[in-house]
Image 1 (cartoon, helix red, strand yellow):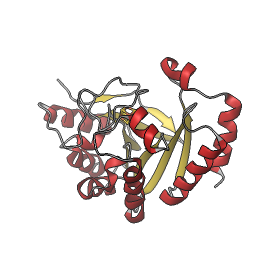
Image 2 (cartoon, protein in one colour):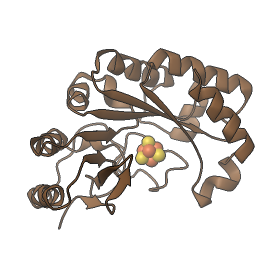
Image 3 (cartoon, helix red, strand yellow):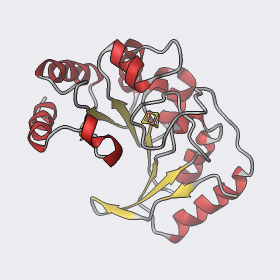
Image 4 (spheres, helix red, strand yellow):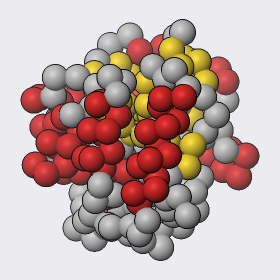
Length: 229
Ligand code: SF4
């Protein structure tokens, strides 16, 4: 059985992108109430080993070789950094001359061992959703002891020394970070982290859209405000 799973190859800015999930099921250090993957029964921030992963390495290698891939995007069922073989996975992709983009929620990027792994990637995406300590605990339900303050400072720390392209994905959530005051707070966070690019998202999943989604008009306003910093 293969641990990895793939999306169909798609084109982004003229590049052929192979998107791969490197976790057999959800493993995450958060348990967000709106997580599209479901609850975090494996709420971890230490690396995990998975059986039969060698077959998955072979499969990934042939996927890259047979599909003229220009970029591999590691976008997993949770936090990809907790796969104990992630470093080898990145090395394998890079050995084929293909750049790597890694999606992480960003919390672990400030820890030395994970920072070194992420540093090997050409692009890293970190995320911001809740912007108050209370909301962070309430809607993102991280591992005990985590704080929003540390979350943000981990991404600041990471990006200060990172040589690649750091992308910050900000998700606007109705009732949590969609007021003017919140937008100003997000602007400050963006300035502190200083990413190369900001992507603004909102709740698009049908299950959460009604309760947590914002209108098209508000989304446009906020997107403009955050893109023009
Ligand atoms: S950080 Fe992402 S994967 Fe993890 S629980 Fe939250 S939404 Fe799900």
